Length: 406
Image 1: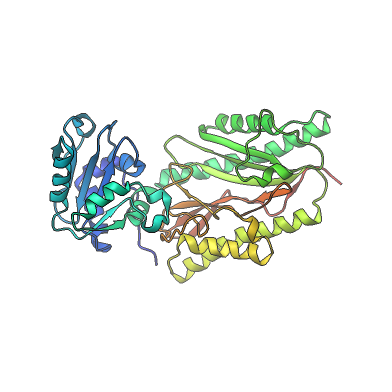
Image 2: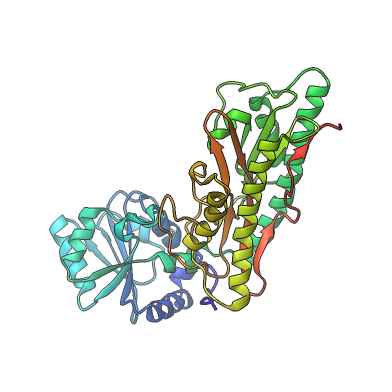
């Protein structure tokens, strides 16, 4: 079975004996000599989050050794940003002194984790500049990706975040259904709404429901939805009778894990044959991904992000739509909508990271035929140590909504 995470390390835990102990245990498990975090002007969001450092204008480093006391190395003028730091501190002023101090920090260590991604396989892990990596390599160390450490200590959800996410998921589902009804009522009333107006309604309803953080949406009809990240100009296109309508919406509570969903409906009494065929391919790819996760969980085998992408992508390729599935199957979700943990991706990147219990992600295959049609179905999954994949919302879409009676 997958290695159990300890639960997320909050910034306060990195300043406690317990937090350091947990990280050091993980270093021992992965046969790493240290984790070296690098920070410069907020360029490494993993470091700024885990270290809770204030504003920085000079390069700073934080080393957690497998054994012994952590050490911070920062510029001599940056004391305020590190005043919360309880462990050893070293300072430098000039670049030569910085390199000398780095060499001392790394002396005797062979395998050191940093936010790097060999071959640029996972860009969301690649926060160390090439020039700095060159300096560190000159110290005689092997740089190893900190990806699994990030998953274990940064991307996993707390029980409170899971609860918030589940509540957000149910609210977003209600808002999506309400948006489809609003579009249909406008058509019936003879005053069709537009993509832009419906977007404004969705954003307001999500925020009013108590989930105001990071709120946004995509509302797109038929051909416009063939652009996966479509954004209307001005009011966008009017939503008329007969249109296929895609609604993608997201939002959450501040400091917690948002929900992210995509729903499909048609402003008519039935779905044409081609749309139905594409929808079934997308839906089946989504379900195949979840089934694969469940199967791996039941036999106690680990699963990696790229494997899930291969499964979903394989369904669409078998149905003849593989070339039109132009993005990854899913993205990590933590306190950021696009989080720091494993993505379900073997197209845009090669995300080989293991899905550890406690992480969450979207599952959102789609078919996008330029200028003709776009269809996507998106749900979210929490990887539960006891129950395996837990899908949100509680009721997911099985068929394209038909918004008028026959």
